[in-house]
Every structure is written in structure tokens, then in C-alpha cells.
Length: 216
Image (tube, rainbow, N blue to C red; front, side, top):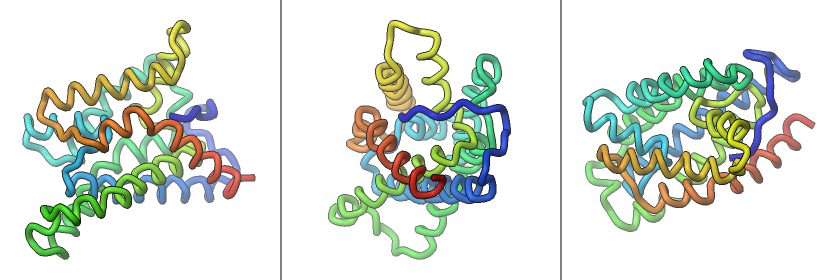
């Protein structure tokens, strides 16, 4: 993932309202993309993969299980570096999973049963779903209002483990969540592998474009 500017906890950099709206839009689009990826069953991002594994064990909603997983990692962010905490942290940590659940509910109401089981539909929606996930992640990050615990911890780890680059730490972090999610029963597929290995550069490029467009 791209680096984020270190900020004071819950700071309000200018233009704050535009940044806040960008963060809200980003988390919403990210949840929309995630709902499509969950529906087509070609894998999800590593964090959501672990969440799906927890869902299969606890039987709670996806949004609730994702919040529980984030609360565990959030404790480490509180302990080691609170500068990553902001409005974006709350938005992503508390609402992303529930937004995904909301769109999943919409699909069940609006689309015929078995719609996402068709091979052509699944592969046809792969890029829109993945694009929404990555664009949303870039938008919420470029707002500069904090990072989700999942995104913040690789920065914290790499700042303390000097012998490993951030890129290596992030890749190992994603692979660890992907492996744990697989063991617990989460959906591992082409999307999971692609995000684990290639998400960082793509989101960094998108984030740079959005930052120049919205805040410079």
C-alpha cells in the first residue's frame, strides 16, 4: 500500500469538508466493490478473506465480524502509534463491512436468484468489483484522515523492523491474513492473490492522481 502522511490523532487538515466527503465516498465505493467480489466468489481481499473465515465460525454478519477483526488490530495501533488514527480509521473500520452487507442485501432484493452463479456474470463483474475496491481504498487514503488498522499496522511494523522494506512487510501481512482466512474457510481466489501481490502499486498510483486532482 502507498505511504500515508503521518497526522495527529483526529486532526482536521484543510480542506477538511472535502477530505471528509472524499473519505465517505471512498469507503462507500469500497464497500460496493467488496459486495460484488463477495457475490461472484472469485476471492476477496486478504482482510475480508479472514473476515469470511470468522463469519463461518461465529455465524455473525460479515460487517460485525469485520468490525471485531479490526478491533483486535486497532488495539495494536493504539499501543504503538496513534498518529494513524483519524476519521478515516473510524469510517473504514466501523462501516466498510456493513456497507458491503447493505449492497449485498440490495443485490438479493433486486436481482433474480442465481444471478451471480453464471460464469459470464462472475467474470464480467470481476473488474468492476475489483476496480471499485481499489478506487475506494485510494480515495479514503488520499483524504489524509487516518488509516484503517489493517492498513496502518504494516507501516508501524516496517518502521520498527528496519531490515525489511515496507513492500515486503505489506506483502507478508497480506499473505498472513490470506492464509489465516483460508484455514478458517474464507474465500481465496484470483482476487485474493492479485490484491496480496499487486494492490499496493495500483492503489499508490490512484491515490497520487486523486490527491493532485482534489487537494492541490
